Amino acid sequence: MDGQEYLNQISSTVRPVKPPRKSILSSKFFMVGLIGAVALIVIIILGAILSGGKSDNKSLSYALKLHLNNTAEVIQTYQPEVKSSDLRSSSASLYSVLTNTERDLTNYLTETYNFKDKDIPAGIVSEADTERDGLESALFEAKINGILDRIYAHQMAHEISLIMAEETKIYSASSNTTLRGLIDTSYNSLENLYNKFNDFSETK
Image (cartoon, rainbow, N blue to C red):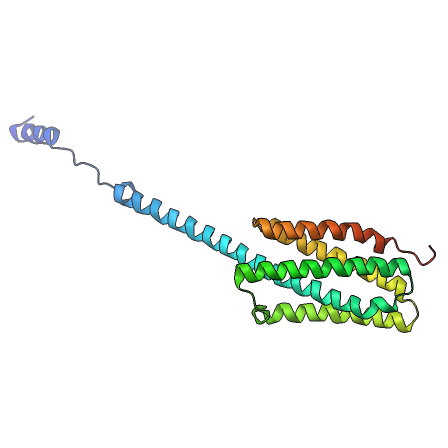
């Protein structure tokens, strides 16, 4: 080995090793920023879920209010036409439950949301009106065909089941004790009345 080769070998062994470059992914500032961004996204998602739940609950309450009111109005129209005294008695009880629940629900909406009738979205009003028109049409046809009692009992049982389903959704979506209380009272009363309409027979 000549002198030049010897010097080259020595210089290569003592040459300092370059430290590895730090990746931006391992930077403390990057990690702090990433955690903050993830936390912000989680907060935004939770806020959207909570606000959406409140909005949905309000819409469900509006729809229930209209359903209660519309069904009570139909009862007022056709109850006097019912021949069975037992069915008229059950109908009067149903009317009382519906109007009391509608009154209490309206009070809740007024206190909670400063409710006015004009606040109900047009889509909810339109859907409720369509359902009421269908109920009235079925009862009118039953009346002119002489089978009002049977159809009336069937339709009221159906309306009760629909209202109870709406109340279940509201109860599950709300944590407000006032709302849950009035829904619970209404649901229990409707549950007792359902069988009277569903089991009605003109031969009894």
